[in-house]
Amino acid sequence: MITKEATAPAPAPARADHEPPRPAKKRRPAWDEVPRWQIYLPLGVYLVFTLIPFYWILLFALRPAGSTSLVPWPITFEHFEKVWTDRSFGTFFQNSVYVGLATLVMTTLVALAGGYALARFDFKVKRAFMLALLCSQFVPGALLLVPLFEIFAELQMINSLGSVIIAETVFQLPLSMILISNFIKNVPYSLEEAAWVDGCGRFRAFRVVVLPLLRPGLIAVGSFAFVHSWNHFLFALMFLNNQEKQTIPVGLNTLMSADSVDLGALAAGGIIAAVPVVLVFAFIQKWLITGFSAGAVKG
Amino acid sequence: MAQAAAVAKPPAPPRRRRASATPRRLPYLLIAPAALLMLGFIAYPVISVFYYSLQEYNPTKPWRNGFAGLDNFTKIFTDDPVFWDTLVFSAKWVFVEVGLQLLFGLALALIVNQTFVGRGIGRALVFSPWAVSGVLTSAIWVLLYNSQTGITRYLADMGIGEYGTSWLSDTSTVFSAAVVADLWRGVPFFAILILADLQSVSKDLYEAAEVDGASRFKQFWHITLPHLKDAIILSTLLRAVWEFNNVDLLYTLTGGGPAGVTTTLPLYIANTSVDAHDFGYASALTTVAFVILLFCSIVYLRLSKFGGDNK
Image (cartoon, rainbow over all chains, first blue to last red; front, side):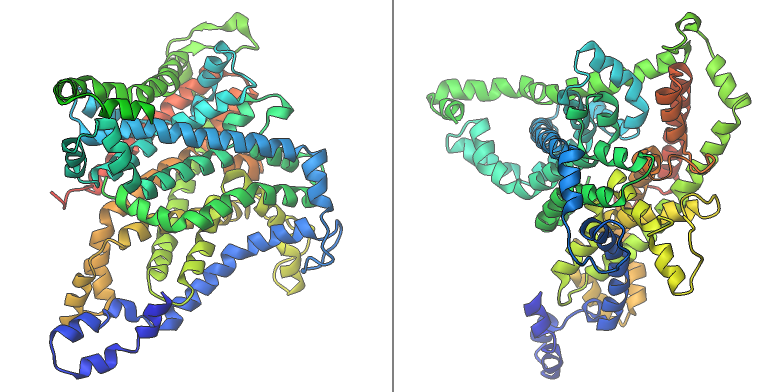
């Protein structure tokens, strides 16, 4: 982006000479010639709205209890220590990581298999299956809590993280599968066929030829699954009664609904909850956008 | 790995036989895990909700359990003022939230689609709340709205508003307060989806429009907006369904209060089933919610002529 910025003044001289192809190439469309202040001003305002809440939580987490300073100074980590050990956020964190990663792996694998079938084959129940995927988007997870609870009770999975992993995976699946099948459709079938001719089996052709091209899409789908299960709250609240089995959102809710809310602890807990997902997004947002433009929109 | 090598090894004739034989069963094998999971954990629960909606079913009052026919539904429509209140609030919530998210999300996407210095970091920053969801958003805004140490205190210091008010516990401010909190994480979602689609608009179109002397607004109106139409329709619908169904934020931010003014229908259902253990009635409410959702979605897709232009 910096290089583009640097070449921005170029169009003016280019316009002066009368060779038709060069001006057309170098000249930037008006769309890109928006006055800078029209970008920076609204973006700045929006950025303030975005960042104040983040700053606020940081402030409460880092300044000593009882302080009303708007600068977190002197910095203290007492809230983090308290939340991590006394409020068992250390355990919650482990549980959340476990649930998040397991959901990521399960969702990606199951959706990859299903997505490949949807992208590459015509089979009898395909239309019905696609319709079921779409309809499932209208089924609210929160409203199925009771029957889901009964199923997991029947399977003896109440109080086991497995129940949450399954529930999160199931509700991630439809969208993930639609996305992945669109990514696969974007990979020319002829590439795979060429690999078969070269002596690859179907599976090997897929692994060697298609899979590497799917990487941005898989990153998008996987991170989506991770973040959703990391953030989601109701399933863990319902299916896990044991405190050692709880996940971070439930821990946060407990901090919030306590009689006298410990704001420092709440802020520290919130930061522990935010760090992994914000990091994930900071690193993958580029793939996320290309991933979505390849998959979601042309569906 | 070993398996893949084994598949590749066999000599030509058997492999060709397999290549023609597998595809028939292969697609079913591939969708089997997904299909089984969805049958077991979505389809079956949905059916049991329909079944329970016709039952009196309350684990704490087992002596009254049994077939109830349409009693639950009759009660919903004739004898439950809470239902109508929550339905009206749900509609208001979804309409305001999705409308504002679409508006701000579109504007934000158009801005960060420009080329400018610091675009990468700018995008990462404005999109970051999207990673944060439900409970954490609530936690953050609970801190901001706190009556003693929240932002109201500092605004009051500057002469705006008064001390000691909490926007979340006042029936006149709680709606706006919750809307702003949800916008904070909802706008980036829209912006990301729209930005993804913006990037696939061909630059040639704008160049051609430029040559023809079209203003930037005209370019937006005649090129960008039609191109985004399907994406906007789809993301608006998805978002509306999610905003309707989502319980996390309001459950933890306001708990449906004060005095029940921020209780959505799903929140009411969750309370009815989890707190009051009235599973039969909650199931009937769920059924009604499901039908309303489906009906609104179909009407919406019809009215917006989704995908109509492309064919």
